[in-house]
Length: 226
Image 1 (cartoon, rainbow, N blue to C red):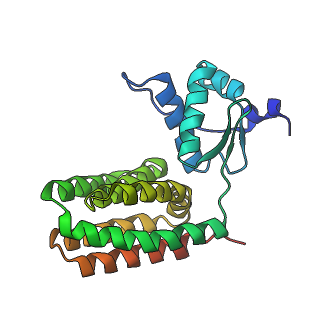
Image 2: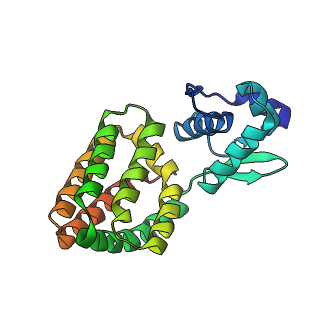
């Protein structure tokens, strides 16, 4: 397949452009939604000139958007050729979730000792938005934000930075699971509320138990078909 054929095969819905949204932000969110919804599958080549024409923007915001998506692990970016959508695998899934299990339990333990009512309230608002949001792409972004909000309470910038990278690496798997098993989203909401109740009680043991259960369940749901 040549590069000239790529634009005809990419199917995505444009994200409505907000009044204060830049062209860069518009392109980034449109592509992120298309990738996380599965409309643009792994392995798809994203050609800057084709995307610019399709989205009616110049190549500069497209290049900036692709760079952002590469930093999140959604694509592999080449400044001259564009990008290729990341292809998920069971091997990567296992590695990412093994490391998440180790580090998120520790982050939860630290967070339970330090979290403030304001941080709990912020996380609860995010969880409520997740339960109300029907869009898979928006939901997985909120899911990432929920976990990062709780881990900010651990007061460990280096641990938070590592976890941010791991959560970025997880978003395509979480998105695939939410499409494969819609009930998983409601279950995740219940898990999140149980985590928040443990944090609110400053019960480190219970908070660690809850995050361990929460991470084990999606791993089985996320397992890709052979």
